[in-house]
Length: 157
Image (cartoon, rainbow, N blue to C red; front, top):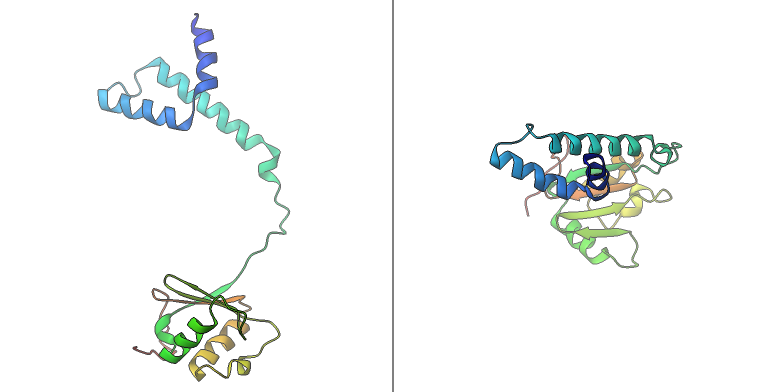
């Protein structure tokens, strides 16, 4: 097999995983960067990367992607009663759209509802909804690691 045939076959079998394994081996045995085989693999990777970059399907961004805004707040900004209401509403077909996750809740800020429609909740929670609506957010994310805002009340429960 000629060198040219060998390098053509390398191009067909080179994968990121195989290249990483080869790279680690060369680093461990001290031959990294001193071997024409590695140089050829690097060249093949660059060719493949250029093909990916040139591929028009990667540039098909027309600006019509949906982007959501969330207001992220610490769970300390809601009361224990608010938390219990959210747990009851979570993943149900109740009055509010609430998704519970490991660290808190996503509350859909429904466009047709006003903050006063959240009358079951504390005034502090209603104020969070008001802020989220004012900022054109789609969700209020209540997270145990979320930001604590000094201008908003904190609750320890």
